[in-house]
Amino acid sequence: MENINSFTFVLKPGRKSISREILALILFVFAAACPRASSAQSFSRTSGQNSSQIDLMKLTKKADSGDIQSQVELGFAYQFGNGVEQNMDEAIRWYRKAANNGDAAAQNNLGYLYEKGPKTVKDLGEAGKWYMRAAVDGSPISQLNLGLLYLRGEGMKKSTEDAVYWIERAAAAEEPRALATLGFLYSVGLGVPKDPTRAFKLTQKAAKKNEPSGQALLGTLYATGLGVSKNAAQAVNWYRKAAKAGNASAQYGLGIMYEAGQGVERDRKQMLRQFRIAGENGSIEAQAGLGEIYEFGQGVDVDCEEAVKWYRRAAEQGNVISATRLGTMLFRGEGIEQDLIETVKWWTFAAERGNSEAQLGLARLYWKGSGVEHNLAKAYALFTLAGKTTDVSGELSELSSDMKQMEMASAH
Image (cartoon, rainbow, N blue to C red; front, side, top):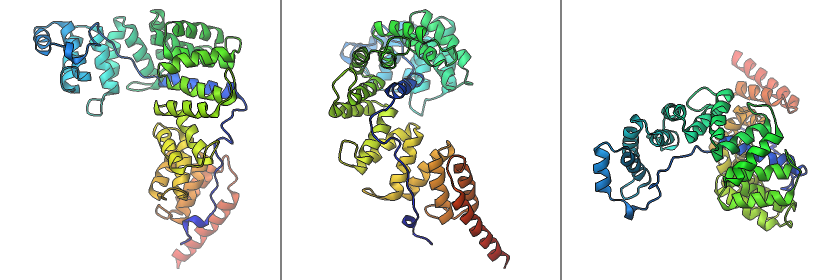
């Protein structure tokens, strides 16, 4: 069997440097984080109380007697462990009591737990059901949450039409996150006609209500000049506001502005710092960027372990390029331990999503039987898929010859 490292495998980095030649285009891409926005929870007037301020016995007695507000507060207490041991089942039980009595906050929070809770309680169908009940009764936050489920196709059939309907209703009620989300939809023409001017107005309204996602998107609109005159200083201003509030997309955008020297003095250390903060807060774009920064030593020393860490985090969130790069690094085993099982896992993930480089790498593994069972038919199929965007005529010709030789050998 041919040694695994003996056949050539070269993948180009996803970007030659961190600098963007077309800053506006790349910046705008990151605004796609808006549809990934998390659903929101409802809070009561006592939700923020700490455990020392909660009289559990009194609250439970009132909840048992049918007091709806107490039931909601008790559900919140169990959800976050305020004065009691955290218990999602108990949180759901108390929220459900209030929800069945028509309380919109309880219905929304019950939906939120079914959407975002641990695996033991997660049920997207139930989430949609409770969001719908509250949304129909006019709860803006539930209307937004329901719209986001429709937008992502989670727990119900994906429908941009239904998504826009519910998000528009929430925005009409001046719900800040709904204003920002609707602004994003108009900025890219998703489910609505593309309208940069309306996108800017909606986003600006959300930003002025101190909504971080609106501030982040407003920064992007100023950076790109979409719906408003391009203004790097204003972009940085709004990115800073949202970044301070913990918005990962704004932190990533601010990092790019430091990198490009737009609206601020160029500062690669600040760029890297913002990327790391954004990556820690879940920005897929920042995680993917950090992987390449450390893999290729772009302004830092090459650090394969750090690159793998960030690629893995982005890949686990579904980033195909990062999954491909991660597979490549694990395949090569340079600076890290080689792991063919993980290589196959991540290349398979990326190949199934149309990445030609992953298809090509996986095809070679099946061809040589490295890390997977020797399978020329699978190899041929993968080479064919990769061939749609890459010249694999040489590999297909050689593989066809191998297949014929095997057929002749089996015939004898």
